[in-house]
Length: 337
Image (cartoon, rainbow, N blue to C red; front, side):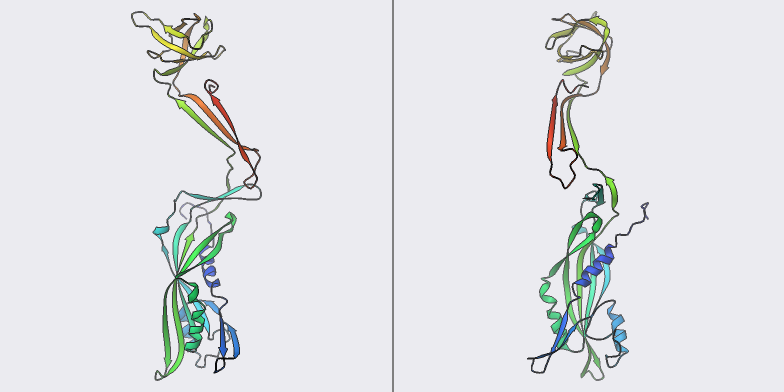
């Protein structure tokens, strides 16, 4: 689908289970006529299915005692809608990470916010039973109650999911002349502010153990220039800080100041404050050293002036280990390669 390999996070199923778990321990207690002595205690069964389904089953049993699987009191709930919630949208390119026991890193893009709409119905024989069950639910929704769920176990991250109670309405089914109550139903609607998750990428990310920060200056202007001289074309050693000149017929001399010179096979020469750009084939003469060489090539790449290397210390540290950082700072001309 959409050019992705098959995946199934079971998120919707987990949302349904998390919602149902909130109501799986409701207890109905019946008392004698004076209300002073308990004579029956029942854990109210919880089922997943639509209200109409249970009304149909109950209507087929005039005594409400026919089946052990379908009887009152009972709570039934159903997922009736899933809607995108733009108010909770996160950065689409954001990622969540988790480290496995083998130090591999699982990753996943940000979840997508969806509101899960639930209908819940409480089926009872009389008003007293209904209000007793209702009072075990309503005080906890003010107007929401937060449930925590482990939606993506492979990332080891739990999510707090608000469940909001939207409405409570009674419904009474009468029998015969409206004087006999056949069935009392309390209908509740909820909104669960959940998430739908993209696929998990298993072990595709790596730990960052080293970071390089470099600062460059432009090498294509007269402020500073880097060239390579032909070491076989002349002799001498340029001195740092001395003035160099490039003599040409019928043109003003080019001048500059030596910043760096490598007296080796590379013939690297860095000159600052150049009056005009040095070109390939120019002969450069040092005023103080009298060193003389011909420019073999001009380097147009930016010059690295500062290099900061930050490493995890120790470099073998894992995500859950104690570690520090070690910095290595290089400044020009040590930054020249």
